[in-house]
Picture 1 (cartoon, helix red, strand yellow):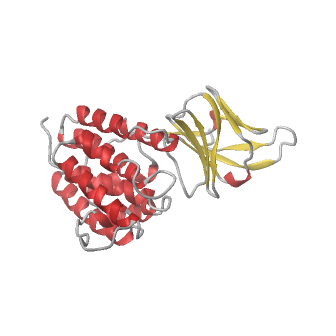
Picture 2: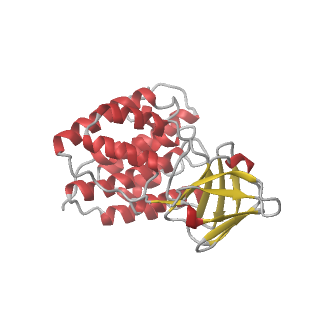
Picture 3: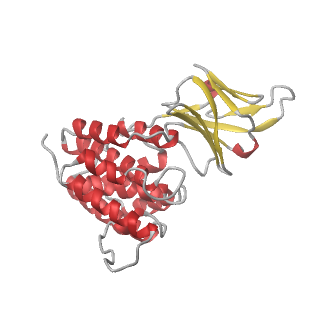
Length: 292
């Protein structure tokens, strides 16, 4: 069976591109247009999200990947059990790939490879992360004599929140970090998504019992931003985009070339979203361990 199908206008049957894949966490329902960009169109229903994206964005638990997403119109997206419709375009799931967003750890890895991979990932991210990313605030070397500014206040909140998280004050630390920064999804929310993924990985890799921490962070991070909430819900369940999964796999295997390629792709997501998520992932993996 072919792994792609064709979008077509119902009235003229004119092809508007190929349907590549759809995410495994997309829920049936009626979604309204939330935001439109050149490479992505977001539809929301409460705290649930579906994003129509092009191939440069790639697969994700809530993504529908199309080759020509910019040509898709409509203000409403209807998702059923076996098809979806936006405007006059109908899509049948039967001919498409269903993206599996779960994380499965490679069997040919060991702790030494993981440690080398994480160290190289951290160094690589510092080089590739955008200037406004939270990656560059993790060093904690802010100038205390600098004049008050949005950037200085952001740095103070972020560093304070990270300290609280490191001390095990998960609810308070999350409250300090959530909502800070730039972007449609605030940098702090992206960071917390990465932190939640790290908690999931610590369970998979080290057998740690991180369930209670995960629930505390998730509920403390809750907001009215449907994009943030959708991404946090995915992270809470350990579900990731293809780009983030590629990073995790490369780190676990300790493969430097793969880490470089995957980090470059992740750092290109959004203005700073990919890099901020990566910063949260590193922070969570380096945080003090909890009992198994």
